[in-house]
Length: 221
Figure 1: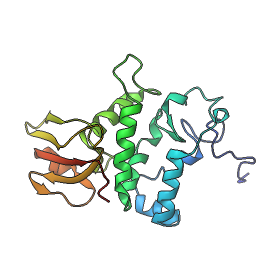
Figure 2: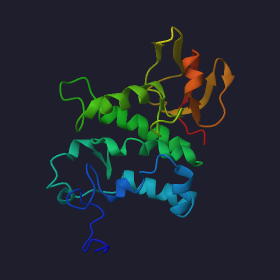
Figure 3: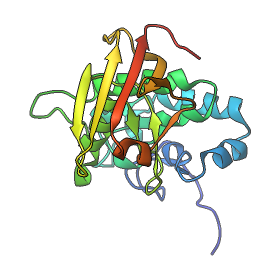
Figure 4: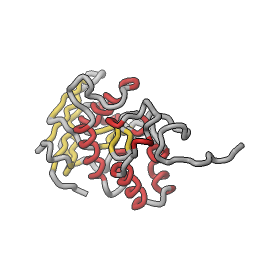
């Protein structure tokens, strides 16, 4: 009929036209044009406020009561990490002046929603994405836009890591002053040189080299 759904519930994860999430989470699902999304939402200030609200508001039990694929153990505020469509959201702060919030929430999610137990994954692991998010994020970067040759910088939780690339090159991840308390990134270096901006390029990584994060207990931005 072309009419909008009557009695639409922004928080409900059942029968609202969205799978594995709700309208709140899907409102951020524009990974191919984050600057455009920020503009449509009313600018950077409003965008950050909406992200803050997503992570800190309370999702009532009735919003997930009739949805078997959204469970409480995979929810942070109203952010549904236990299902894959929302996985890019913590990195969206990178397009604002509040990049430190990406660093904070990424480390919080790694700490609280993953563990070494047999049930250490929240939600499900469709196509290995829940595990892939953790591996990428633990190394300090994540591919927000599927198919794009860029990665968004976050906050690594490893002290160091070595990745042997398929082409024979080696990618080394190093951290300085890494600790559970130092979740913020003061500086990022690529082969000893300051890395500008908030992104890495795939072409850089496959050439091999050393990516260094200087950690801090205080936000740099």
